[in-house]
Figure 1 (tube, one colour):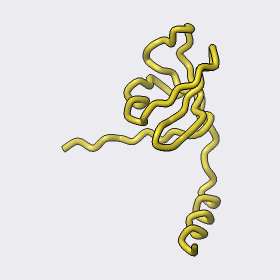
Figure 2 (figure 1 turned 90 degrees about the vertical axis):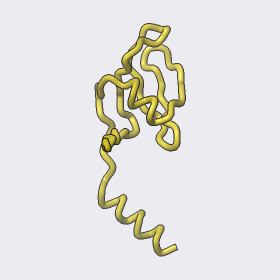
Figure 3 (figure 1 turned 120 degrees about the vertical axis):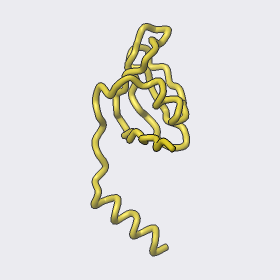
Figure 4 (figure 1 turned 135 degrees about the vertical axis):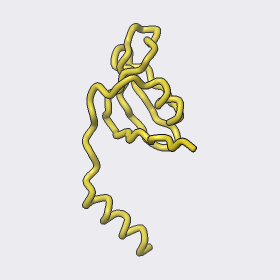
Length: 84
C-alpha cells in the first residue's frame, strides 16, 4: 500500500508546470484554493481551474511560495467554529 504525499498549496504560490501554455508561459500563480485550485498564467493572464490531483501531476516545481498561514490565527478560528 502506497501513501500519497499531499502537496500544500498556498495563495500566491507561483508554480511551474510541465507543459508550456499556448502563449509560451510555464509559470502560474495560485489564485483560489478549494475543491478546485484556480491558477492565472503569468504571461497572458488566462485563468483556469484544475482539481488538486491534476495540478499535482502537471506541476514541475514551486518557483515562489506564498505567505504561510499564521498558526495562531488558524487555532483561534478553529476554536471559534467549535463554540458556534
